[in-house]
Length: 399
Image (cartoon, rainbow, N blue to C red; front, side, top):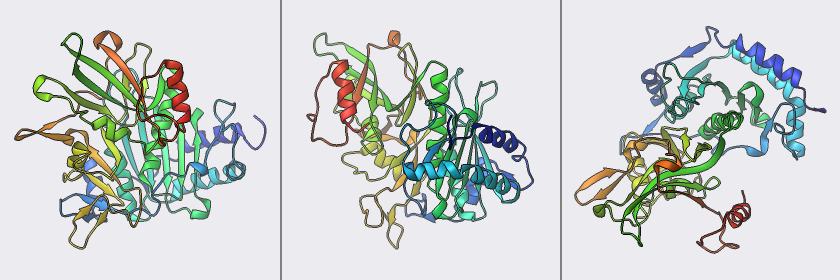
């Protein structure tokens, strides 16, 4: 690959990094101990849930670069700012090695997905020279599961150094070596996306397709036959287009008649050739601008004491107002899927599916692909499309 990319530098960095990950400056904590550290810097809301505020409240895609060899790795049309980051990447990588040997870090090891074929083991290293960054490791860790024995991997590494000066804020992705590095940002979504992005890259090499989509199981009565039918539903959409909302929405179905929807995933899944999919996350990292009447299940999970809140408005008494965005428009929360509940009669019932995976074509009556577009200025609000029209609709939807 032509300059400014230097694959030899990236290879040597990956080799040297392995030897810098076991130093005495790197702390390894149980989830319980990590939670205690994180809560030291939290605001406790009136609901009993912890709340933190980050300096950076969104991902830095414009400052994200892909380091490697070949058109399948690097950006096809990098901006001048991204090219400048690539040119200076060797010195930044050298600095990261030095920091990994000297600065205090916490290491969290978690598992992506829950199946027997593809379970990336995710190793997050967060610099905790500023103690409030323990919450960054904890929030991300709660989106993933415990590492199970006899699972195939592969192993991923992500390093986050929030203390880097914001003038040098950047994300360096080295896909061929399963390494992601975030510098100058304390946004939880950057850690989440780093691992999921790497998972999509490796899933592709195993014959799967990484999809930016939520998934759910829908059981509805067929109007023609009167029989209940079960469908796996994939909802494609960019960030903030409504994947979480529609993944959890009950669609006005009649639960008393056996109808309903059960959510599996809300962001990234790996589609297999038989039509099934592997989920990635056990906890959802969602936008918090929710209304109890329109997003009942999400609201109930976010007001539960188990929710981990980020950049959400609270008053002097700790009362939460999810719809008050005067100080920011990207409030977030890590929610427990099991707390996605709706009221049915006098009971609160969970709409969490039994698994984060979805079944293959032989096990369901059909698979539905739905495409969510952000702006409704080109396409009608809803319409049934041919596959070719669906592709165009998704492209027009800013994908």
